[in-house]
Amino acid sequence: MPPNASPDLATSFLEQPLDNPLMNAAGVWCTLAAQLDALVESSAGALVTKSCTLSRRDGNAEPRYRALPLGSINSMGLPNEGYAYYLDYAACHDYERKPLFVSVSGLSLDDNLTIVAALREAVLPAFLELNLSCPNVEGKPQPGYDFEAMDQFLAEVATAYRRPFGVKLPPYFDFVHFDTAAEILNRYDNLAFITCINSIGNGLVIDTDSESTVIRPKDGFGGLGGDYVLPTALANVNAFYRRCPGKTIIGCGGVQTGAHVFQHLLAGATLVQVGTALHEEGPSIFDRLQHELRELMAKKGYSRIEEFRGRLKTL
Ligand code: RRO
Image 1 (tube, protein in one colour):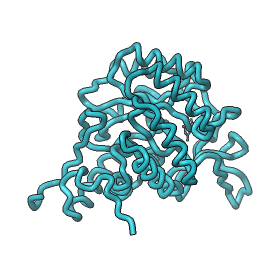
Image 2: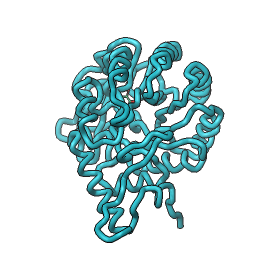
Image 3: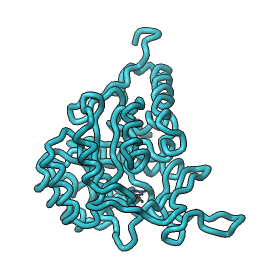
Image 4: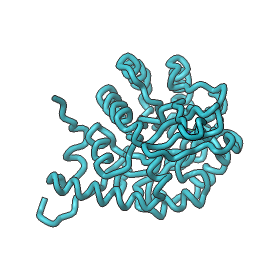
């Protein structure tokens, strides 16, 4: 790279060009059109909508999100405006400006099929991210932790949707589970991308002074994000990058600095999502992260992301 030239963060995702690999994590700054508009106006390279259900939902009782010194805990319970609202938003989006993902988290397979059919019939260039990993709806276990259910979901959605789509996975913690999940995902050719990870489900944060939980729903149990989850996120990104060579990986989890973005890219991510840190800092975080990533790349002598993506060294 010539001295003083700034590293180029431009990349592409399923053949669509992006200014940079950063975007929000589904659920953060993306429930209402005004929030999505703020992401469009920000320097994020892409954006994703809040996971949607058939009908509008208020979600769980407050307090349902708490920021903590090392991250966050949430039990939002899928508050969203209903899928039609996000399809309307997607229909008006300027795709030349940046790609838009629509996150779908129907409460049943039938609900997912209804939403997916509507998205297909809308014939938009939006990317479908099917959320198989919401940890916070009581009585609704995550399909991502039930491999038979996951395979059935994918078989039906892949056939119904026909176009390329992706899944948002929960974190896995055992090589047997990485292997089994990857084997299932690799059965579906139009499953084009994998987003790793959703929050680490059902953590419990306790406040010593008040001797109490810190969020109200589910007796205080909720999904963890932020510093708590970075190594787990990197492990899942790299595990699926190794096992699913035909698929594109989106990294999500624990990103607060340019170095964290760099680590996700090194582990094999093509795009990198920001959740807890975006919630705390707002959409200007994308400027800071890009600045920090560029500085780090320049220091290392990298001029483009392709020079190091997936090139994690092992000992
Ligand atoms: O809305 C939520 O409670 C929520 C969802 Br759908 C999800 O996928 N992940 C998460 O941490 N919270």
